[in-house]
Structure formats: C-alpha cells, structure tokens
Image 1: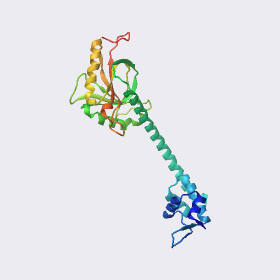
Image 2: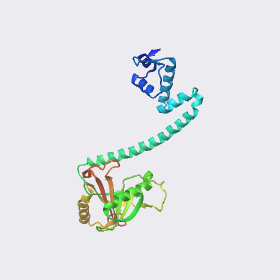
Image 3: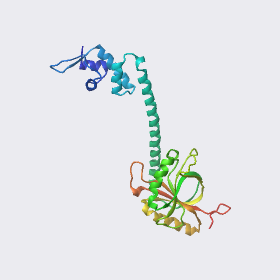
Image 4: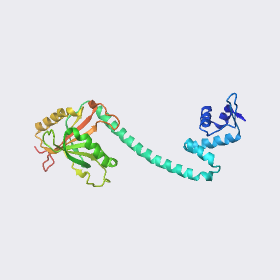
Length: 278
C-alpha cells in the first residue's frame, strides 16, 4: 500500500486533488486508518487515478468520469459517452469562435475610437465618401428615442452589420416631437430584403464633415460650426443629414459621454463638372 504522499508522487495528482476525488466518491482509498484518518492506496487506485487524469485531459466533468468508471471497464463500453462529449465540444468550439469574432469587433471599434480621441483637433473638412449598403428603420418621433430604434434594428440584422451605426435626418429644421429619422447600420451583401426594415444603397459623393467629441446634447455647437463653414463657401446642402456614431455607449459600459465621437456628414450638391454647387 502507498501513503497519500507516495500515491501523489506516483500519479502526479496533488494531495489536495486526491482528497477532493475521495470526497466526490471518485477515488476511494483501499484503506483509511480509523485512528489517524490516514489514507492508503493500492495498484487498483493507481490505475483508476490514471484513468481519471486521462479523462480530465479530455475535458470530461467529474460527474461523468465517476459514472463511466463505476459502470464500465472497457473503452468500447463508453463509446456513447465519447461521441456525446465530442459533439458537446464541437458545439462549444463554434460558440467560442462566435464569441471571439464579437470580441475582435469590440476591440477593433475601441482601437479606432482611441486613435480618433488621440487627435488634437477636430476641424471641418471636405471629403469624398463611398456608397454603402444599409439596412434602416424609417420612423418619426423624438431624437431621444433613437436608442430603441438601434436596439430593434440590431436584433434584425446583427449578424450582417459591417460598420458604424448612423442616423439619417430628413428634416431641414429641428423637430421636437416628429423628427423624420432613419436609423441605419451598414450591412454586408448577404443580408436579405425584409418587410421589417429598409435595405438600400446610400449614395456617396462629396460632403462636408466634422467629428464632434462630447455628449450628444452638445451636438448643436458642432452643427453651428459646420453650417458656418458651408455658408462662407455658399455650398448647397442635401438631405438627409448624416450622423455616424464612431464611439458612443458601449456594448458593456455606457462610457464617458465626454469621449463620445460623432461624425456629422452633410452632402454637397454638385455641378456636372463635379464641383460644389454654390
């Protein structure tokens, strides 16, 4: 017989683990000294301990290991357990891969937002933007209701999203109760048309844009800045006005509104030669 220390050295199991397996009824010593409580083990315990260690390497839970070792003695007898366990692992791998992709998406978004935050100034610029495929919900209501619209749309097209969330504002003025808004996500081509949302190509072109850093309730200051820029150059604006949310409330934390990043995009009417219409 082996003392628990000797048994630990032979099997590679820690004394703490051996005691746990004993408590779980998984590895019963061949003898326990009633006066001292010392555990003693024999060759059959060694064989069982090695079988337990092997099954643990295969990620079997202790409850399944006990059931297999108590009921079966041949590898062929536990075939059903092995096949079931393989299926469980395969499903877990798929789930973990999906989780890894979601994490990578969050990491990438936060990296982009961090790079943007490191910029020292946010100035009005003119640039060409590409056409993109978007899925949208067109609705009327308060500006403060956009969060619910994004949640609804996210549930409909979540797996197809390929860009930053945005709102299209079809009014030329401020509306308190009945703003005409389309809440959008850029999506991949695989998404199928549905009655639940609008799928369309959002046309690109020349635009005047400005990245606003700060809470949404201070966006009017940036709108003032961008409107002054357009008036000075006598540019004609096209509706809808676009707000692209580069960084906002996160999927996990609400974040600091002072660090929110919103890009305001106003499309410019163009002449036939491609120059801005004044």
